[in-house]
Length: 72
Image 1 (tube, rainbow, N blue to C red):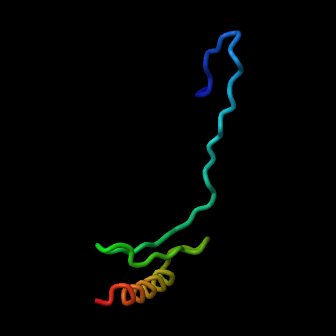
Image 2: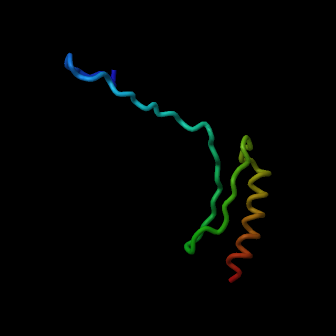
Image 3: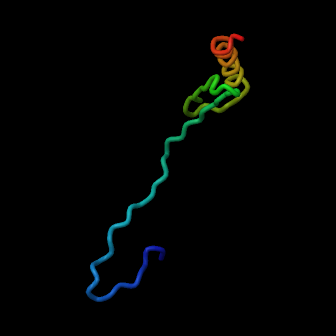
C-alpha cells in the first residue's frame, strides 16, 4: 500500500522501486579506549559467544596493548 499512488490514464507506468534488504553478516567488535583514543580493539570470531574464557583472553591482549601503547 505504501507504493500505491493515483495515476492518470496517460501517465507512464510505475517506476521500479528498490527493495531494502538487511545484511546477514554481523560482526561483533570489542573496543577499549581512553582519553587519548583507541587502546585496543578485537573482533569476536563468527559464532563465538562472549563468555568468561574469551573475555579473559581479550583482557590479556588489552594488558599487552596498554603496556605497548601507553608505557607511562
